[in-house]
Image 1 (cartoon, rainbow, N blue to C red):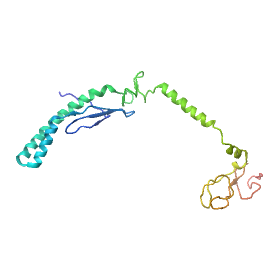
Image 2 (image 1 turned 120 degrees about the vertical axis):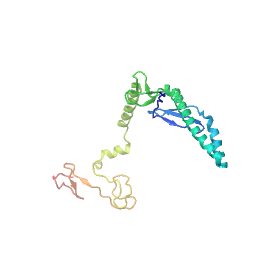
Image 3 (image 1 turned 60 degrees about the horizontal axis):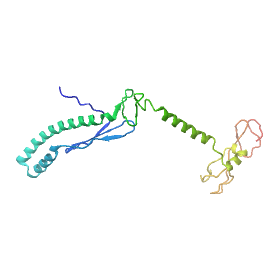
Image 4 (image 1 turned 30 degrees about the vertical axis):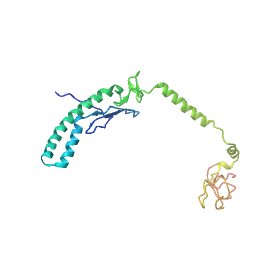
Length: 215
């Protein structure tokens, strides 16, 4: 019975008529290893036969066809041998996770203590450091000082009103809660709402038309 050739999906075939070469890579991080190029001795002879056949044809052409068929069979046997050798050479660099079945590199993506890939069993120290860094960033944003200009705005009641971001006439961006557009001069009428019930107020209203609260 012929020897079974074990193969995986995490490799790339770089072989040519002149030799064999393969790349194997980690399914998790993409780190790869390339085998050394293994020359195929008949590759050069085949190229010479192909050139002669195209020049002379005839009997030499038929001989080249026969040589090509012989070369194909020889190439297939050499390819199988080269692939088996490549797998044996680089297989120690990779391991298949028994949980998710992915092939990962031992160097960076394998948790030796847990016997699983780091997607299934992450390094706790790395995860704790990442979590602490993330929490620190969140706290920095939460405790960031408000600009002095914005503090003054927050002291006023105007910030509670609905403020337009752009001019209704020319769509130019507005620098703040202005009454006239700095680009076209159009009057900016911010829509007001009742602070008690939230009802929309008509322009110039002093009392809410819904609940009677003073504006």
